[in-house]
Length: 174
Image 1 (cartoon, rainbow, N blue to C red):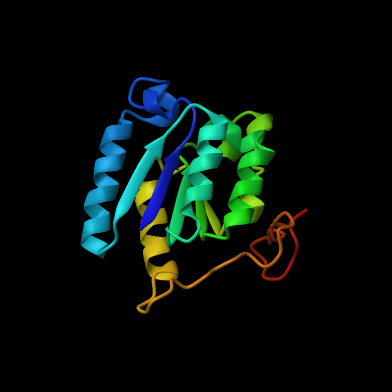
Image 2 (cartoon, one colour):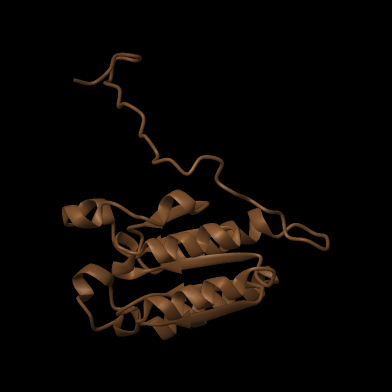
């Protein structure tokens, strides 16, 4: 089973700032994930809450039950040490998803507290980002056999991006 968690205000998708988040509703995203999960042979359970503690409780329930977790924590992405700690504690392969590109938005949205304890992050691709996360977890976390393959990020330190190079190969851009 792969659990998909949606955080605060995501129940308003389709009508909330459609120029940022698109017109796809949460119900449509969930239905798409269940359909794609069935095609992949994976049971998908979806859950939304506007309450941080409820999300922490649901993350904790994934331990020993879920092969993977997909989370869009909404605004809690940037503030919730509790969600970060819950993800780290359960050691379930987790992919963080965001409909918008966090780095193209306000400065306070550029930092994710969850990213360092997640397997990966997909942002800026709209609703398809959820499906990509599901496909990645199905391929990486669900191996045949009695136990799901455990994947963890070896170093929870921030990711450092590579220096861009100019058209002249090997010459750093200034």
